[in-house]
Length: 486
Image: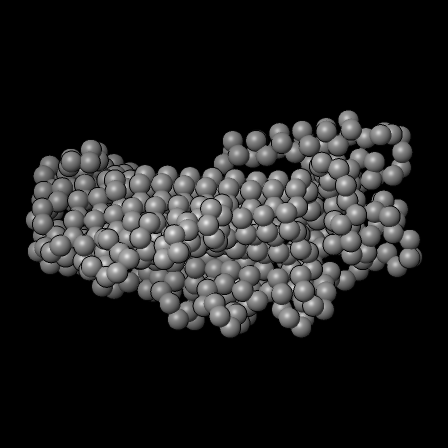
C-alpha cells in the first residue's frame, strides 16, 4: 500500500507539472490556461466561462466545454447538491484524459482549492445514477460525494485507466430487474469488452443495496462472446452499513465472472464492518463468484490485509466460489476476520449440468490470516469444500484460528470431487505453523469420511500433549508443535 501511495503521489505531481509547464501564460489569472475548468453552482451571475472567477454552474457543461489532452474539471461544494431532474448528472461516453476533481480532497491539486465535499445527487424522477461512464480512458474521479441511483451510484462499462479515489459513495437503490446493485459497478459486457487498469482507493462506501464495489465480467457462451477485467486494484476503502439504512449491504466487495476472464485482481487493506444486517442472502465481506458457464477463468487473485468484522452470525468474511472453469494463483493472506465464518473456499461442482464442467480452485494459498470469534455454531472459521465434481487444492500456513463457536477448520468432499488440503508437511509444501485452538466443537471437523486423508503437521493445537481428540477424520497431524508459534 505504501508503494501504491508513492506511485499515486508521483503521478499527481507529474500531472501538476505538466499542467503548469503547458500553461500559455503563467502570469494570467485565468485558471483555464492551466487546463483547469472550475464549477460552482452558487454562481448565479450569468457569466460562466470556467475560470476561477466565473465558474460554470453545471458539471456536464464544464466537461463539454473542456478541451486539451489533460483537463481538470474542478467542482466546488457550491450552495446545494448538484442534481438533474431526469437522466444522468454526468455522462461520459468515449471520454479521454479527464480528471473530475471535487473540493472534498485537494492534495496535489494544481489550482486554487476550495473546501467541502460537493454532493452529486441522483435524479429525483428516473433515479438515474449520478455518473455513467462507457468506453472511457484515462479518467480520474477524486473528492466527490455521490448519492443515490437505481442499480448503481457510479457505473463504468468497458473503462480503461480509470481511477476513483477519496470519494464518498452511498445510497444505491434496488432496481426492478436486478437483484444485486452496488455503489460502484465496473462492468465488462459483450464480445471483447474489457475493463482494465482500474484503481479504486481510499473511498468510503456505505448503505448501498447489496454491495459497495462490484467488478463483473458478463459474457455469454451461448452466443460465443467473452469479456475481460484485468489489472484491478481495490485498496484502502471503508465499507459499512448504518442502523438507519433502508436496505442491507450484504456484499461490500463483489467480483463475479459469467463468461470470460478476470486477471490480476488485488483487494487489499480495506476496512469492512457492520454489514449484512437484515440480508436475505448469506452476507460476505469479500465475495468472489465464478458462475456456471463454459469458459470462465480467473488468474492471479490476491486478497490480503483486509479487516472484516461485525456482521451477522451466518456471514462470511471472505467467500470464494468456483462453480465452473478454473481459478489459478489465488492468495488469501494477512486478513483479519471477526464474523460468522472467516474464510470459505468452495468448488461445488455442477453434477453434470449443462454449461458446467466442475469448478477448479488450483493451488490456493491461505497464509497469515487471523480468524477469531467465528459466530457460526455448526461450521468453522476456515471452510474448505469440494462437492459434486468440483476440485480444490489449498496450502494453509501460519494462520491463527481461535475462539470460534464451531470448529477451527471444516473439510467437506463428495465422492466425485477432489480435495487436497495441506495444513503442514503435505504435498503442497505448506510449512504448517498454524495456531488452531479454543474452538468449541474442536479444531478440525469433517462432513464425513469422504474427506479422506489430509495433512496437518507442525501446528499448535492449544496444548502440548497429543491433540488427537480435537481432530476429526483421517488427518496426519504428527508431529505437532508444543508451543504457540504466533
